[in-house]
Length: 304
Image 1 (cartoon, rainbow, N blue to C red):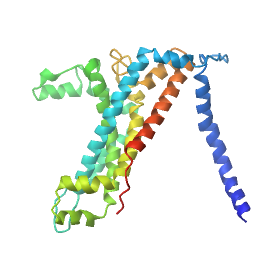
Image 2 (image 1 turned 60 degrees about the vertical axis):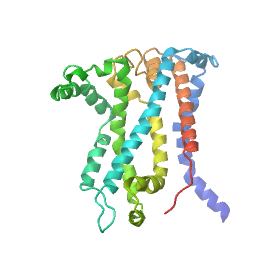
Image 3 (image 1 turned 30 degrees about the vertical axis):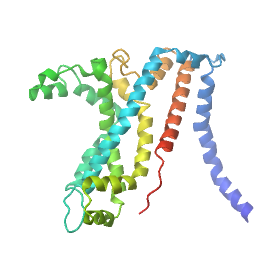
């Protein structure tokens, strides 16, 4: 009977496993192999060169510029997005007046959630184009607003300044991502029994203490997942940089990212082997990031 059960399960798993191997595992294996060749993408000739592409990466200043910028994004984007999302979610769910009924959210919570989530219905390309117009030096929305409020001295060529361009790109990434995590954290906070907050209120706990001692520990699993996904997004950034920035990746490699260098080497220079090496490096960097995040943010699970 048990043998028949295993055969029954295997009959259902065989096709999904084959599809997974063909469409997921196989491309990874091919990319790892191509990273060891000098393939240029237009012929069947693939000369094996071993670790030559990876050695070249170590001496490529553009690659290091992209790695540096991705590192800055990795530090700023997840932290800023999660802080904003936690703040907005706590205000929506716990920011209302405390009456006899206990803790309640702010009025118009559903409308606010829709407004915060709205960027998620837009494609990355549309978001990049919209913000490109916002940052336009002459007739852009940002400079026009500064003129309207009497702050013309702060006008700038936002995407043309090496010291500002990357920060402008990161602001767009945070703006586009924060709404999703507001909804995610709101759902997690709504699952917390209100009796816990009411007990804390009766004990005299303020909003800050309640958030630090109750809310954050109980939604920590969601925060941990958010760190991983936002870290992966920060290690990418290709679409936003490709559409918004001059060059793209400029000025002076100020917004260069690894994904952009990979695309440029493959589809502009025809160096598919070298681009595959960059992809393999990015793969292991992302994998290491996810493992470290899970390790560092591990804590005892809080039950309620």
